[in-house]
Length: 88
Image (tube, rainbow, N blue to C red; front, side):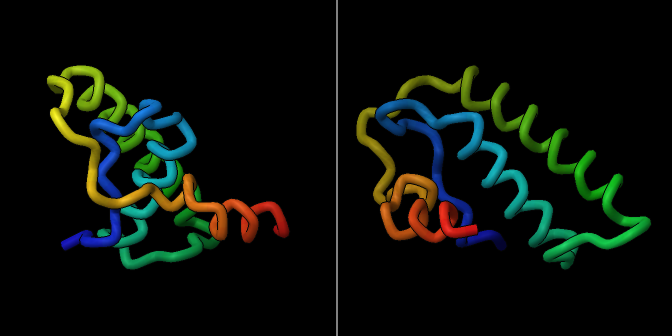
């Protein structure tokens, strides 16, 4: 379902809290169908992001190390994405 969510397990250096939160936010956006929550949905959306972030952190901490790093580079590690975010 969520082909655009980047693998975080096995990154060197390890996934940052910012990368984990971004992946959680992308997941919640996908399953909810909401890109930018408005009004009454903001609290529920942000609570879901926090829960998915916490679950992802626990999962990554519990998994055995990978033998090889993921095939794709997380978006927050790509120079063009970092440059675009700094312009905001």
